[in-house]
Length: 514
Ligand SMILES: Nc1ncnc2c1ncn2[C@@H]1O[C@H](COP(=O)(O)OP(=O)(O)OP(=O)(O)O)[C@@H](O)[C@H]1O
Ligand SMILES: [Mg+2]
Image (cartoon, rainbow, N blue to C red; front, top):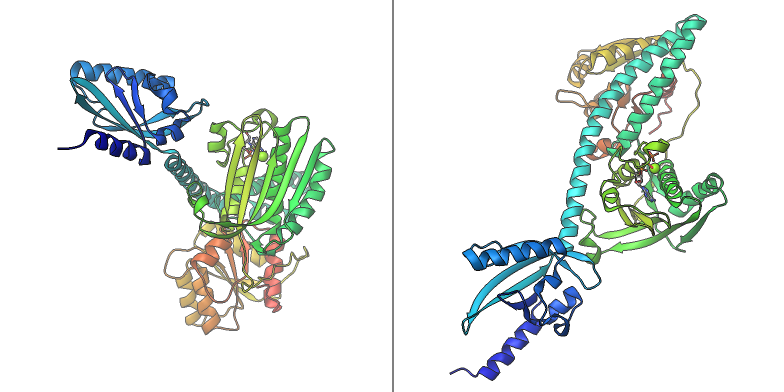
């Protein structure tokens, strides 16, 4: 025989210990019992719940479904929620709604039907799923954008190059004016593609070991003037901050973008807070920031007390061309670039916003440990025309239009040329004794050898031969995929004739910028 008093004590203990919320109702949905986890979930204890209809725990639309399910089940025995589980929403006492999984079982005691609902909080899982979906969508858009921008870069290389040749070959004044207009537009196009490439994480980054506080201080000086007196910029920089590997120029542009967005959101005036600190990412962060690896980071946060963002805007803010400023000429590329830059730097970005209160962005960059060495930045270089002395350049490029143009440009600079359509052909030509002083090669080409492989083979077998690589993509592709020991000089497409001239000249003069 069982002891009913003891049984009920055990049952109470079980209910109290359960991690998930449990509620017992009668067939009308009136709550007969609720446990401690329910109190925590809904902010309502048994004293408030017992005697109430279970609808009190649901937002209106869920409640009306619930009534329907119950009536249907009582009438037909058809199961919509009873005996099965469902993802629904719960309503807390303070009016907030949260995702939860509910499963309902039924029993009969003394001829009375009873329902037992078990409710599991889905807030964390939902946040993780949303974050994953968001980052997957941005990845997909990024891949598409990167592909298109890369192809446009090739087209613009051809357009800009041909226009420059026309310009150099002596057009009359009227023609020169037309050429100038065309060049300007083509360069605007090149600017747009380069911004899209930054979003697609294929930007032309030159990371150097930096102290974020220094880079930001410089930018903030500039911003103080740009924003004007009605916006107050406050800074909070930690006394010790680890160095990070970032491109300072891109970081400045990111901070500018964030600050200008903040200004737009703050209307007549407001306060911008820029803070920098070391943070360690551990398990507590992981639930919401799914694609962030555990470890040490330096966080740059930029917060404003402006109008905030709607949930929809928060979801889409980093997408290229998403803007709520169509009237004032927003392009929707600001945050997309910030996003791409941070990701390409191995970092992570977070966004927190409350409508009417303000917005805060967190940019996390991996902290450099002491042993990680410094890479030397490339110098900018002057814009003088460097002319060749009849040396031979072997041009390796699979796109025949781009190849033809490069050959023209290089000849115009006083060099002789040889050409090859792939890295494999170029290598064979050299093996067969082709005489060249410099190999000017595209990076990504069909065949076995890409530009880097070709350069590596040349370094080994023809050490006197110089190599200049050109690419529409940038450093991450280069360093990640083709990690060769030596780093090679890269000329990024689309490039100006003067850049090409300077690079070829410098290589031949032996002062390779590595
Ligand atoms: N600090 C902020 N406060 C409120 N809303 C913001 C904030 N930052 C961005 N947004 C929202 O995100 C959208 C996208 O921002 P993004 O910087 O990418 O483009 P934009 O500012 O509209 O145009 P632009 O290309 O000129 O920067 C904005 O239109 C705005 O709705
Ligand atoms: Mg903007």
